[in-house]
Image 1 (cartoon, rainbow, N blue to C red):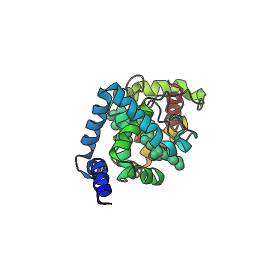
Image 2 (image 1 turned 30 degrees about the vertical axis):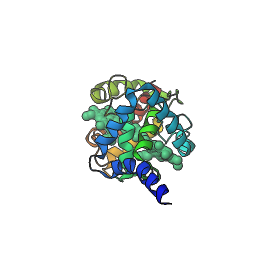
Image 3 (image 1 turned 90 degrees about the horizontal axis):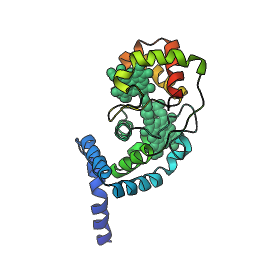
Image 4 (image 1 turned 60 degrees about the vertical axis):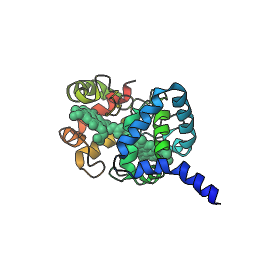
Length: 212
Ligand code: HEC
Ligand code: HEC
């Protein structure tokens, strides 16, 4: 029994300790970077991620292509963005009851492995969302969004990929940013979404859902 507890503490502590520390975010990024450096380790992490993401597939799909239009696709999402969202959900800064419950039960290793798994999956072309508005959406996107999310909408280490995201999820998310700071209070998007009219939001959602 004693031996078992010691082994348990040794195996378990590194990941929980990481989560408890105030340098949590930096430690997670370092862990992710160390796994990306070596292809074999990265492959192992992805395999562990697939296993740990078993429950996620019921909403986000087996390969991160979501089952419902209001649930975000996670395939090909930037891994550091995913990692950051787990932290925001777990400490309830980003509000969603189901995601908060799930995220707080993920260890540091789980988070990194799951982020690497989804990032490695291919985003499939979704159902076109209000395609008649896509041309207007392209003009708005080019003028208002590319400075941060990039010309392709792929984002980068700090910014989410929004290209190919589900149109309905983008519409809901932009509306939440626009109407208040409740859902994602720390976001840089409040000011930006506040300047968008409802028609602009629909057009942007239409265009972004067509990108690959
Ligand atoms: C019951 C359905 C459900 C399950 C199961 C679920 N999710 Fe989610 N997830 C959602 C919904 C809905 C959202 C959108 C929340 C919002 O609007 O802020 C979301 C959002 C996310 C986001 C943020 C994506 C973004 O683009 O910002 C991540 C990351 C995520 N989920 C990962 C996971 C992982 C990992 C699991 C498994 C451990 C999981 N989810 C299980 C429904 C689910
Ligand atoms: C000043 C930089 C900046 C600009 C400009 C910007 N964004 Fe963002 N956006 C961000 C950041 C940072 C996030 C990360 C998430 C957060 O903080 O809420 C984000 C998140 C998002 C999300 C949520 C993605 C997800 O998976 O949940 C959507 C949708 C989005 N932006 C759409 C847009 C659109 C459409 C425009 C143009 C009208 C735009 N953004 C312009 C910085 C920007």
